[in-house]
Length: 336
Image (cartoon, rainbow, N blue to C red):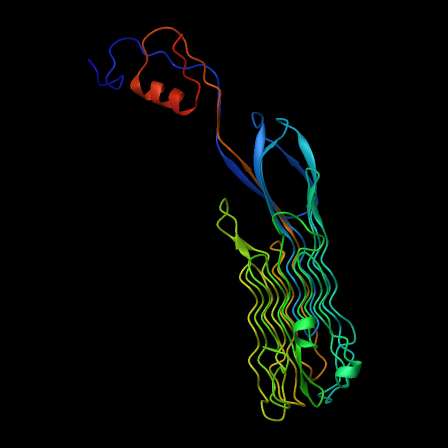
């Protein structure tokens, strides 16, 4: 009868050997990763730590993928997960609307695995208490650049720094001076897009108009998890006498922190949101109002994919159709 053997008459001979299922492992802290007993090659993702914010949003950590990398089976390999950069503390006095953060956000840390690395994101730019002559609000360089505050098109934080191929990130947005010590706060760059612009052109925005926070640059999706990583942090919202409640910018998909600072010229401020842990998202910037803090960058991550393995060995005799199918699919069927 043919039923038990899937259409083949005779004795069922089971294949000898072993198989190994595919496995995806997300590594969230520094330590080691051990391959499965039959693994000889892997695909993997490295994401560096996101940059911390100030007024401008923090840049995302680097996003780098590798395929078919040879490894030894059953072997432990060291992993270093990059930390997120610190958001800038505030030093402005309560009730003073135009004093600002005095430091840029900190850069993110580097993630390393198998002699490859993804660098940290650049920190968001700080502001100034005077006009353009005293403003130094340039976003920090990094895997993705931090968002800037002033100087329009010349001020963005440079992404893919140090350079890799393919690029590990994008530039931050440029900022702008809007007159009377009011600035435009740009978003940090993400793995998939540049940060949102604080100033659309050399003229930037009209004096005293205030601004909405600029969006963080979008991150990228990794197929083996379906998740998004390395989104840029948003820029803080800037209040003014004409726009007392600006809308905070949204962080880029992939863990970027949302912007803060939705307040009036002398009202209570709002903290910038932190980048999401283990995504490499940049921190969210804050507005220039009462004492508030900018968001920290999110820590990095490593994701390892081990493909399925089939080491089945044929024996003589009659095989069931199911056994033949499994052996052919696993590339272990021979005609000897």
